[in-house]
Image (tube, rainbow, N blue to C red; front, top):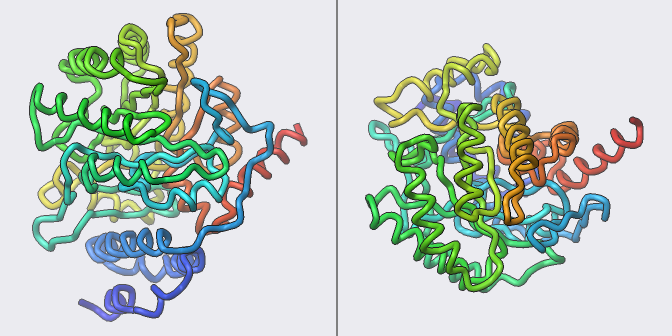
Length: 398
């Protein structure tokens, strides 16, 4: 271990800082960090990410910020306080609900959870746990986490104990566990959805597109059967109003959007999310700053070390998420399903201009992940406030 690596991993006093201050410090240290080898950068950020999330979960609640009333929307009879919320994967075990509610998010989304507890991925050779790499110049990141979570039974039980704060709805993302196969996987997923239903969550998102497990191809031949099974065994047997959204990949070919929507309409699903992280590494590489391509190539092409190469998130997905959602909205307006149905956009959301574009296309909600942490490094716990203020400034100037 060289001197720089020892500094970044071992400086205990850094971890005594508040999360917002720590994020700002990290932003200033990036030029030094990039002097390290790609493997060292991944090692540092993989550990630092876990330490940072633990720290942010421990910090006290903030004064409540509620977005202006003009941003509120009612979807499926639920009140959303705005058009922007966190994406799945940010709070895998239901952490930080009070923080999210106080910051001004439209709603809170936990998970993705699986029926059984999962440790997540570990890089085989050097034992890097939950590999992660940021590309800050590019507004992007890669992760190969592998669905680490406590398991749906524990997460549902913990969620049932949460008290709603100032109208902030709670949703949960769930997925068929990669540790099961065939009908058993689907049976376990139905049991998980039932557990969250009993826990009182306000909406559910089914992840059909995780790139960091052996399952997760939204275009596979088994998709129609899975959607029908879940509709027959859960959707049509719901004991209360509980919207269920299906999340697909941002790599979905545009010609498949309408057939996918028709499947969701037919089986009674309540929404679609485009979408999840990308494994189209060659396409996303064109959006990566030249200074960050060595790290990007190390993470995404060295599959002997990082399994399937991880999922790419952030700005490189911006154009595709908007296009896929725009097509989905057009088909929704033409198809007019019997149930209330909404389109959610995830991928590349980072500023007010992105929300304006989504609104112009008729997209109901937006979720952010990579852009959210970039905003946190700039604005700390005022990220949502600053974004909505910028939205108002842009619309008043138009």
